[in-house]
Length: 85
Image 1: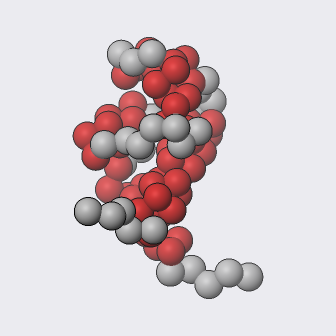
Image 2 (image 1 turned 90 degrees about the vertical axis):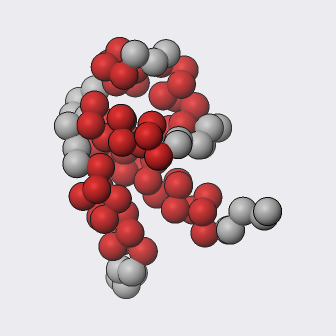
C-alpha cells in the first residue's frame, strides 16, 4: 500500500515539535537518550528523518521531555490549519 504524501510531512512536523521541546528543555540528544534508555544515535536518526518514530516511541519521547503527547500532537495538527502570514 502506498504511503500518503501527507504522512511524511506530518511526521516531519511531529519530529520538529519534539526536537523543539528537547531544545526548550535544554537537553542534548544524549541526555534524552539516557532518559529513554536508548542510544544517542537513535535520537539523532529520528530527529534527522532517517528513521520514523512509532506511536509508542512518540509517547515515550514526549513524556521523557515532560510534554503531554496529546497536547503536542494537537498543536501540530492545529498548525496544519493555520493560515500563513
